[in-house]
Image (cartoon, rainbow, N blue to C red; front, side, top):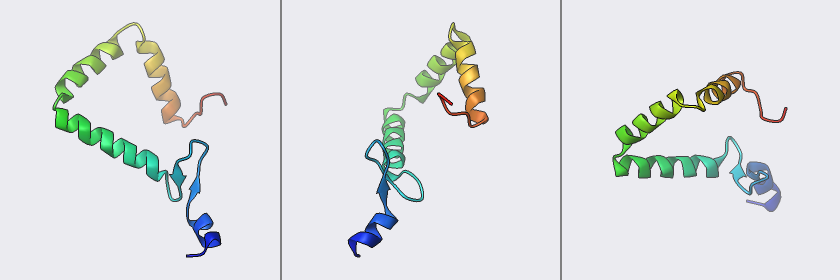
Length: 77
């Protein structure tokens, strides 16, 4: 494949991640992290921590962030 064709097929974002029909590097990191988490077998512990956090002092900011995410709002815009 020529260099010109490769530049059209894949590009890099501002973080140096390879992108095309998505962000391949971010997807890979997510899958690796998920696999490590599953292997540790601490899902129940993490769920309890998340529940506690959602009921704690930062609950309102978490709910606000969730709503912004649902509306596809980008921070700083």
